[in-house]
Image (tube, rainbow over all chains, first blue to last red; front, side, top):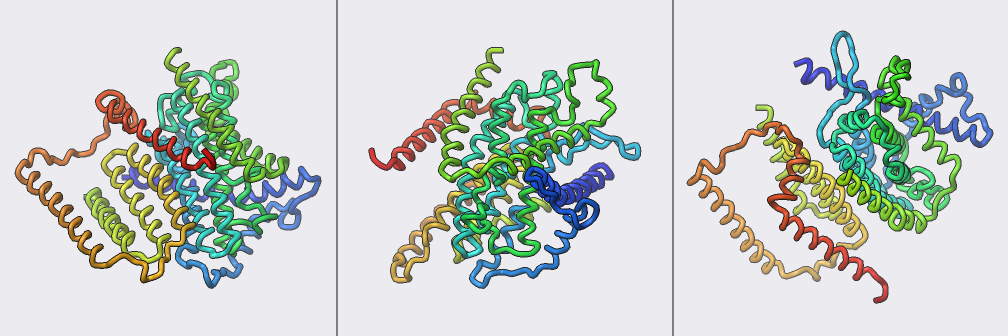
Length: 339
Length: 170
């Protein structure tokens, strides 16, 4: 009874809260890092070094007036932020933080659901997330959100193909679709897959930038052309939900990259016994550290690179990434059969 | 007990969304109901311990094909003037024929299964030792190789056809 219902429920509760809090503080990290890149201080007023800024922002957003445009499709307008938020949150169900940890004498695996189609689950759940953006664009009944919604969905569909092919390459290497199984496969192979499949990692990361609508692929929310994009007509907490979804998606992409290519909860060099001292750091700390490094890279890229033009974005997706992805998959499969 | 409760809830939802797909006026709402319908079907697959099929159902139908539906419905103005509609009576007659065919089929299945009760033993879903994905892969590349290859050829032809149609000049 405890193990079938109570433990998973507790895990879900803890994870959801952890994700939402970290998403909130991601906004602070982003503003601080960009400020430092641009030789500014960033938020400094609320709390020491501005550390309470996200809480002030959250309160402000909650207290703002919630406006629905008169000509909007009211039902879909309300539905859209929810549809973009929910897939971002439930994607965390299959991401393994550690093999297991001991709490009050219980051995608890640190993953909510270790299903044997975990990777496929992630791909299909993220493909649902695009509805939030299209629907927001449609329901606002305004030209900028509509344009942005169309851009976003075309972009997501294009880059999904390359990403999925890269995931297939990794699956061919590991021979399993389970996220825990993928980490185990890297442990058994004594190597992180980033060293075996560097091209796959690069394509997955570029695709991840495009999937989360981050710079340099943030065409759907290009301020200069679209006055903010699909969430132009939204205000208050509904507006915030879109941003929470974007940051949650960033964490998902970072977590997946860490699990698939950087050994998840494994310490660096799991094959070198001389580094036994690293084993004193628990696995979930390694996982969070790797995820955090990717999140930092996301922000770093945003602060550094200018935005792509739309036709360049499409050309990169269809004429560079997808052919490379197909070649990588074919080579991986042939080598797997031969070796 | 719990399983049948979940099943009947899902079945009711599937039928409800199916009806809404046909009856809703706004085409975008229709497409949304279709997505909800597909998601419920995916949950039925999960209930039958066919996770792989469930994920493919979401990925291909809910996440892929219906997004294209939504594009078409959003970009093409579907509001036709009232006099441009087809003759109502002909549609009704056609509908009656289709419904009659469907009812015949369903009753034939019911009669057949009543006559041969052994062929309809509900197989309790149990976790197989090998995963869904492996089983389906084995089946596709051994027993069903020819249909599988034919289907992939069909898709290839469709893809080439789409590219030829989309090219600006020949």
